[in-house]
Amino acid sequence: MTKPLSEVTPNTWSFLRDAMIKPTGFREYDARWKYPEEINLPGMTALGLGLGTQMRKRGIEPVIAVGNDYRDYSLAIKNALILGLMQAGIQVKDIGPALSPMAYFAQFHLDVPAVAMVTASHNPNGWTGVKMGFERPLTHGPDEMAELRDIVLNGEGQAAPGGSYEFVEGVKEAYLDDLAGDFKMSRPLKVVCATGNGTASAFAPELFKRIGVEVVESHNELDYTFPHYNPNPEAMEMLHDMSASVKASGADLALGFDGDGDRCGVVDDEGEEIFADKVGVIMARDLSKIYPNATFVADVKSTGLFASDPELKKNGVTADYWKTGHSHMKRRVKEIGALAGFEKSGHYFLAEPVGRGYDCGMRVAVEVCKMLDRNPEQSMSDLRKALPKTWATPTMSPYCADTEKYQVLDRLVQKLVAKHEAGEQLAGRAIKEVVTVNGARVILDNGSWGLVRASSNTPNLVVVCESSDSEAEMRAIFADIDAVIRTEPLVGDYDQTI
Image 1 (cartoon, rainbow, N blue to C red):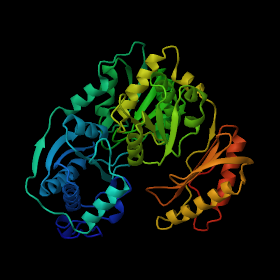
Image 2: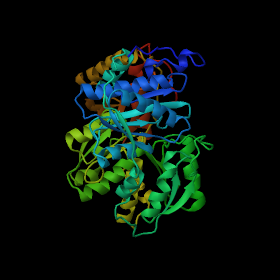
Image 3: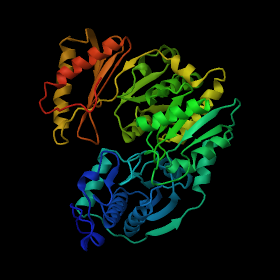
Image 4: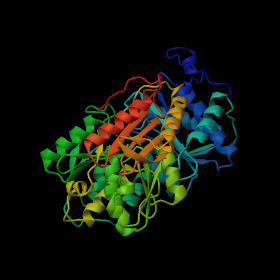
């Protein structure tokens, strides 16, 4: 194939004929572009040909499950991608409109090695992208994405015979059967089901009813214009709406899902949003009673409670802090045989025997309902209040150009490690250790911590701090970490700060 053009020029003769792909769409663990400003349909076909070529290069059986989210342009993009996959000699099994975790489930259900899910995830309309993977339950990480990018952008996609297309019926039903199993609630539970009119609208209300949950509907009609808000349970707009629905309906909690259903947001019976890392600790407490001595992976932006919570310690839990990003986390959970992984952004990775190791917002919702069923005398707010109190900053992102951020971060990590080695204090306390798997997480002798890392998809650094002691200490940690950051002139202003 010829090299795709790197400039996209809509409303031209060439736009309807030649592959156009903006190179920046290849991210660390998926591909994402504005459509049609950054990729055209022939560009998507070139991506499919590249993905199929990558499969053949790696000796993977040439069969792939393909799905698309509920947006008005996703079907056209999926068909363009399928065309390229078939050109590369791949047998395509089209599962139709789907959630990302339904596509991951299809790999197991249909026993196929590969998956490609057309979705812009939680990005607003105007975005598209592909989540893909070859080794279930894993998705492409930085190495696989770099290899795919080079095949596509260098025009190294190769046509091969044997391509075919089949539309597979019944995967949605099998996925819902798998999620519900034979579980039925034994206590009454009233849940606000928030789907923001996105793809999860076709799944979540039905799933809740099947397990015996009373559903309070919240924007559950499919509508790809997203008339109320963009479905993203990290966004305050959605969380505030969920909270208002809980208060208005007297529900026991609200569960909200993003545009492709791989993340879940939780608001308790008091209308209080519980960030996913804290929900993770609540779930880990419950699961570690059933599975003592379990290992849990948390991303480096998550609360220190996974390591310091007395209940988890009592149940013999091992905490492992790892790189942020769904592909990194999935891989780590699989590699070390963890029971679950929790990411602050709302991705949960529940492994055997609870789940299959991939991130599925629906599976999390079912497991939260099961947890409340096992603790019938407790509300979600009771479980939240039972956690040791900590004081945490929001995620704060100072500007740092994409071309500079990794070199800047390397120097910051060196400076923070040097502080530890020199026996210097941070926020008036001794530094216990500096975890450097993904930036630097500086852990103090009382379990409080501060983190600086590079954002994987925006021109920013990322800073998060948490104190197990007080708000004053949290502010002191931030002040001391920021003082080190300010030694780097290439770092700009924060998007938000405390």
